[in-house]
Length: 101
Image (cartoon, rainbow, N blue to C red):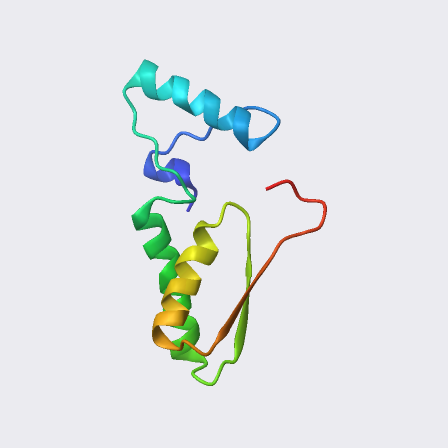
């Protein structure tokens, strides 16, 4: 299913995330919307943490996991869950060399 089937409106604006966020903030004011930050919103981070739980459940003997880093919401949730369940597991954050996150 696409997000639009659930009533979402997808807007791609700007040449980088900063411009997109600025535009989103104008919509908040104009349309009375709420902004949910995908990087540090507690429910978003908690949702990402469920992946860490699944990793430990599926591979209990795991020694290390590699997690992509962009805005940090994914690695925050995954690492919190993994370190809570298996503190000795190494969590490694990675991003492409030429990617401006």
